[in-house]
Length: 388
Image (cartoon, rainbow, N blue to C red):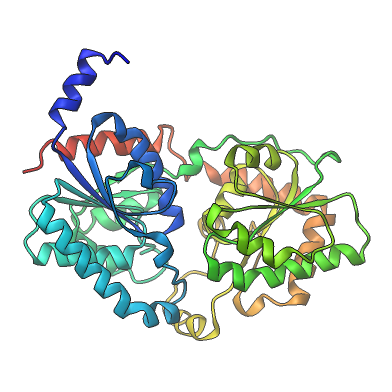
């Protein structure tokens, strides 16, 4: 293989540069994978915490994201001793190995405490955070706290910039990764024969939500609609779990971990029942009508209710300050409410059309005309070239 002179010069220049990446969430893992794909030509050494897909880019992988399964406040509180030990171990590795750059991705509470410990121990090079905490929803004071331990933050949403820039933290808007998804032309054809179930990317989400998907499955049996199959896109480490929880289902269910095949399946999806979060945004970008489910345990929901300043879980609803995508969440998530929402989604064309119309009018606020990962690449190169 022949390399260009420029490529050889870049590799020689960066041969000794080392980057530490900390990612403990599956949504962050997708970002890490794409950033590492961009950075591989520079021949950096990349170490840290990641998932299965990104590990091929890592020289030293210290922990896997499977260790970080906490979802709600109660689960996090129980896991605090474990997380503190991991933070301590990671900070020692970062300081001893003298990384030229630390990149924290998502997981704002865990990564903030890691960054804080590094600063306290006199780490000299830059620490950046990719994906901002939702300071516009709750705990606004985190913007000020972040400004004291991070050198820069990359935001997915343009409206987030002001919260951090007001605290003096350099902010770069990269855009949401859904920018790169191909939109599917919205129509309501009879040929679409799949109903998508997206139960989440964490095992505890699946445990909480699969019983509700089973309710919809059983309802479809009672109304004798046999034209639809079920489609559950998932991740390799979750496929056995989902298969075991659905093995007694009577409706044909496609469970797929293949991203290329998933894109073909999505073109046949009529409607989706979606776990709130990134998955819901991806369904919106694909112009698929949906309802959104979300479930915190009772104590977590009770505590959060005193602090959260927003009425909705879905970002598109938050931006519109109204429910353009039907949410059935927390205390409202029960059999009657779920089936009523699903029946409307399945049978009411006006409901579906209106949702897609309003989604189209909102998505432009979340996307960047440039490739988010190319923006990341450019800034990372600029930052690391100035490392001590």
